[in-house]
Image (cartoon, rainbow, N blue to C red; front, top):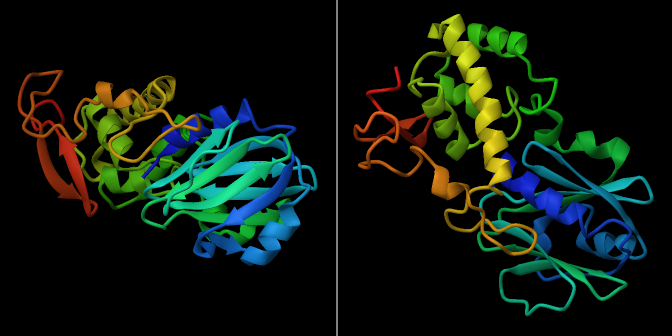
Length: 274
């Protein structure tokens, strides 16, 4: 599933090409992708609307429109958004196409059909339950050490489970939780309350460092993720533990292990994570 770095990379790509483009038509090949409103209202209502900007909240992508409404897209596991100046061949996984007046198009493709799209007035975005309950953005001023320290102290869960909790912190998923904990030298199954103040400080910095680096390298492509131009990310070449079990830890040289933590496949080094 695309996580914060992937969605932010897509957002930046779309921010460079979409503003001021006017939607003239929408092709819906699979109406199940559209959650609000119904597919017919979605198509007819968007005609003539101009994109004014892009945004992101956690793993949710925003396309802001000139009438004070927003298209909200969650890519889930296999969703892709690809922009093209010229028509591209559609296939059975091309579910939505936004056509612009200048001949360009934005394609929403999704192999697993889990991706979701809403179009709502800005004042109604709270109707999207997952969006409304998100915690702070990890790279914003809202995420600060006193907040992390307080939340870690009061939660009786594993530290990996806490990192995956979107109400604690927006946008993290399995890849970056594993990478952050390796960077911080913390075992994923440690009880969050057991972390010392020094470990909490290290964790706080690791969150920022890993996500910043992943965005710089345009996200991680393991299988499906592509950016807005259809290109793969490059951070997969810099992963330290994720899906590297039975390989050598780049920090200590011992073997990386895999287990199940928080119901997710989890990768860690048992020697340099404590």
